[in-house]
Image 1 (tube, rainbow, N blue to C red):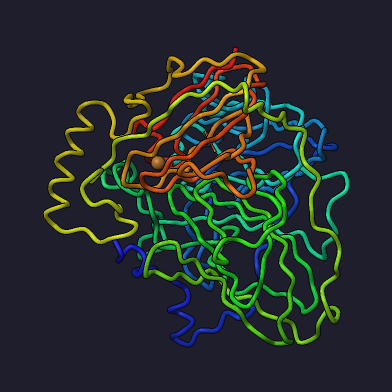
Image 2: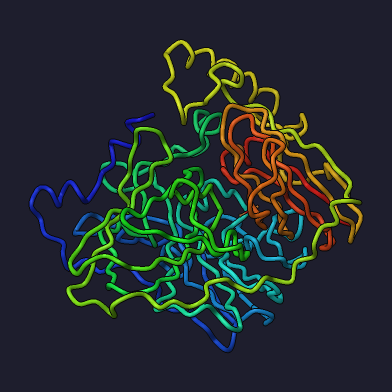
Length: 486
Ligand code: C2O
Ligand code: CU
């Protein structure tokens, strides 16, 4: 396992070998192909992209419009977004608008909310965007392979009056399992990934590049929108020498606060908007590192200060975003449902799972045995005892429209799971019986091994909504269900 991390085929090694790539620019987004107002046309198709860069061979990917990430889609809050999606892949696809409260028919779940988009066909998604914030889009068809191969892009819903910053920057994070020739390893669907931490890769990218540096200026205030588009990798980012404040989670504003222990933790699909004041000296260099997996510090890139500061000190302007129009759950009258997530390898055997401890060869054999057994019985992961198979699913819960609900979630496994509900945002009320500090709104909540988390929301969006783990290998190995709002 650890060699998957250390064995990065990194351009950094080439750099150390003396080759110079100083001219490598930090990738920024070209605006998407806006046809008029907030209308876009995007095409899913194979492409080759300079993921590693620096003269390294390009990587064959599946892309929107030939780029990874796909174009940054922008729309103003309250306005209508229309996206025509053309499928030029060799297989069916769909697009899901992660975190957006869309009408059910626009949710992009194949066989549940729409027929898949066949190769050569185009499907037009159109919906209003009630919430401002940082969102993203990705296929919901064979997600563990389609998203992993590069199909994803950022979607920003702009506030009518945004907070005042010098730069509004998006970093889409991803994690790739690359072979020494720079190509994506095609060992999709392997059982080790399915039953354990998911498809963890060996190379982390920012905006589809193995980035080296990010240029900043002293006295600058940056709004940094982080999106974790990885299938399975959890990021815990530390900005050395800086004090970022979290102003939104999963697109939803939160009371500005410093991240716990200075680490911004993002499970797959989760987002955080940070405000970072650039207070370093001219020419200074600071590392941005990921320290989620124990003993495996991963340098994402360096913040590099310009020789000339922008101004003496960052502007002192308010950074609290205005709340979105979410219905407040009535906790006093809310009905509670228990949801238990089970299965996976080594449950109850090692306590911490592989993300925290090593694994013995014997443990591995026993684990594989139980896993084969699990696969034979239709899945490796369960929600309330059921491992979902195939597409069409009966609802695990039916909720009455406009009523408030509490879901008492229990992660009864040895692994982390980022649990995502479609069509709604929910408040994270408590963890392990203690109230959360910010009662944050999220659409994806990261659960630690064995953890209990309480979430609450008003079931105000009618339809059949997926409720699943966003470690996409876990999802396809059974960790999903449907919540019906009637
Ligand atoms: Cu981001 Cu059901 O997905
Ligand atoms: Cu999971």
